[in-house]
Length: 388
Image (cartoon, rainbow, N blue to C red; front, side, top):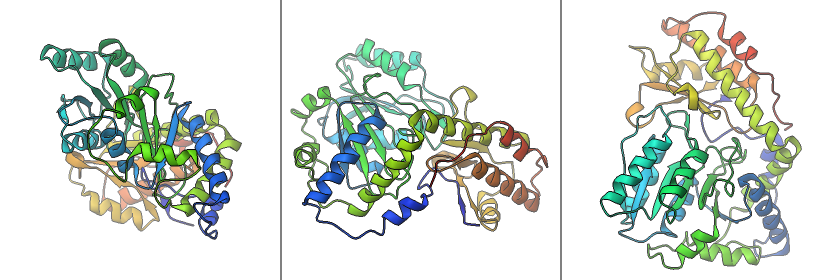
């Protein structure tokens, strides 16, 4: 049986997607690539739920986040960063690196940001004479297993700071979880290839609103490779400004065939079922869940490691069972484990991971409840994986 890769990304590839990565190259300035580029670009708009431009850069998701910042802001701009984990901190750090004046209120890791907290943070900046030029948020924080209620938080931003751009890191959520770029008034949204889209790392996708394009006209942060205007101008010709990752475009094209065959409502339901399975199985085993249940992510589940248990030992025991889970990041290193469940995943994958975890825990002397985790997980699900 192949390795059960259960981390928040890169995610396993369906067989047809793997095959597409071996196809022969085409001229990236020729008609074949132009047709391919047009297909995947329009399908990304459906995934983002937007009529805005969706641009594709050759990078990881972090490259897309850097593009989101440097194309729309200037050094010295006041920026509010709503961070509930490692990746929220990363987005804030990108803005700081390029000279933005970033306000970073303290939020508890393991809990979502609340509308009142965002409202208070904006009011505090305004009282100090620094109304935010942009508000940065993370949709799905994989370091903690939390999904922020972007719709509610965005409504506060639009009401309290209507001139502020809303820039959202949707890398590990868009495509797997309901997300309304236009409906929620998100100005810049970013996702990455190796998450819900079921393809290898190497592409970032950035949706840009008309308001954001207007801001870009006067933004002065430096950019070259990540200049989104260059990407927009090239996209008109069915091209990218720089040599694209042609093989990954092939794979994205095939992945969209699978996505369209299943449909986004079913995809969202499948991820919800896998999230429920992971949480139910861990709880039945006796692991204390880390994330607030009200906002627990349906793409990654986090749980406390028992006292006295080294993550390295548990990870090694899991690998011996052909199962790979993720450990904690940042200040949570060595404190939590994480089960990723996004992309090409079904309930059986989660049950197998839980069974491996139960077996590994027994080997290491971790006191867990036997016999119930898989049953609890199975009872919480019932949604099948997409055809591969």
